[in-house]
Amino acid sequence: MGASTVSIMVPTYNQAGFVQRAVESALAQNWPELEVIAVDDASTDGTVEALREYQSNPRFRLFRNKRNLGRIGNYRASLKGHARGDWVLNLDGDDYLCDDGFVSKAMDIASRDPRVALVIGRLQELHQPSGELILCEANKDQPATRDGRDVFLSLPRDEVLPYHAATIYRRADALALDFYRCDIESSDWESLFRLMLGNWVGFVPDVVAVWRLHGANTVSRARAKDRIANLEVVLGPYEHACAGGFFESGVIDDWRHKMLLKRAQMDAFALFSSGDRAGYRAYLRRMRKLDAEVASYVRSRYSVAKRLKRFLKAGSKQREAP
Image 1 (cartoon, rainbow, N blue to C red):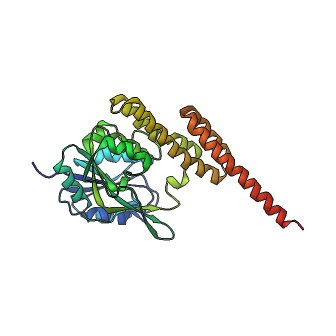
Image 2: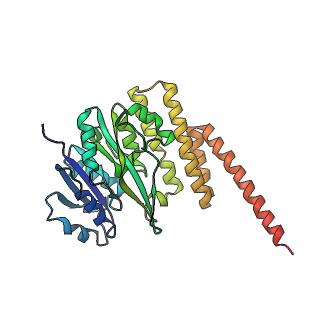
Image 3: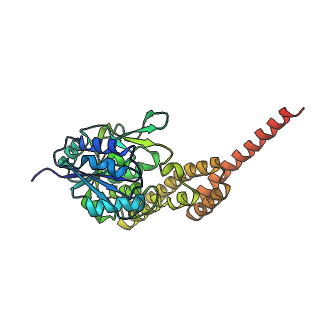
């Protein structure tokens, strides 16, 4: 049996200033059975022109959507319509790989254990415009392989996070699970969390990818309604776990509660800090229906914050008074 083939998908939209680095980092991978697929989502800048420079490379293929499908729609089109590999890595057009051997290391792990359906490496964040690189703590000190159910239960602790640019997954399993079914910010995690169940997870101990954080990232622009919709990143895997009978009810219910609490604290902080009071209240109403205890905790925490803010503001006015 020959070596597994790997598709690196580079979905992109209006990323002319970034996409060449993404493609070049993908083409630099030393795995022999590799294809790099760039799928442009009807860009209006020079993205397509930048990508055409690579068309002479036999490992590169370029596609352009006739109409804009949106970020998640483009993920689906790339996976279902264009990728041909046994395994897939999704590399957004503004991110890049920093380890030329990542695919080879991942495929070595997968070839030694057929139970493995995804392999995860470590990640760095590149903050712009400062240019600061920050190493993410997740995925360090992991064994070469680990039961996916165990990894799944560790998710509330952020011990393991399957960052899109640093995760290679088996394409047949992804198609069977209807990857990228949810048009939400964390559609990748919703899919990869489900893939963990019933499979094993492999780990590459090295830093393999760079996630570029800038003002145009979806995560930096999330509104209240998007954050509410994104709770499916918890609910979808929870329902999948229940339907598959992977855990006892008490165990999976506790996982759901912890995951909702983690999401709620991050989302509430973002909404509260941005001054979106209407969005904050709408988020709490939705959370109250999902987990009243989580909603109560978040509400009490930010009630204290509001009182402290008013107290500090009042003190400042008193000091300024003649």
